[in-house]
Image 1: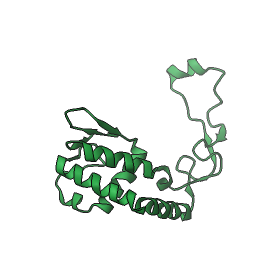
Image 2 (image 1 turned 90 degrees about the vertical axis):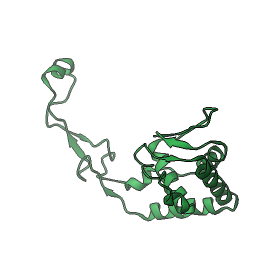
Image 3 (image 1 turned 30 degrees about the vertical axis):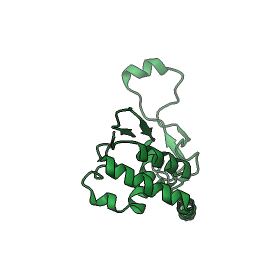
Image 4 (image 1 turned 135 degrees about the vertical axis):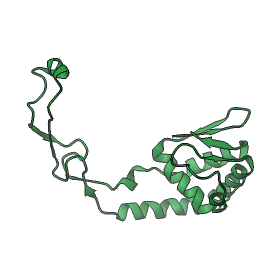
Length: 164
């Protein structure tokens, strides 16, 4: 997932999916007028956009939040909520902490002959490190004040952007 500015200078702002989703959610929370625009839709499916006026208004709204310390407060509150969430059963091992090798295809069997454990042999789940539980999905999404600052700067200088 990346956000690309449509400004003539070709400036870009990029985030991974794991950083973009909480940033987009924050944008809608602090700048509700963005949701009234027809352009905000599809920010989470790689085909949303923002006009130049919307981008600048969003950029200034984000800057005011950072400058006033409210973005840091939001980050701290968000972290406390996530930390208070209980662990969830690992989806890869169904909470057992153990997985089992599955049969290889005929074409890959020759490649791994003798090097691959037998079908059905148990091994420690790589999804949870053998614990059977892992942190909730919300814990995988990164939110930082620095990312908000960078996006604010990008929005204030661009002529609108498309989510690509």
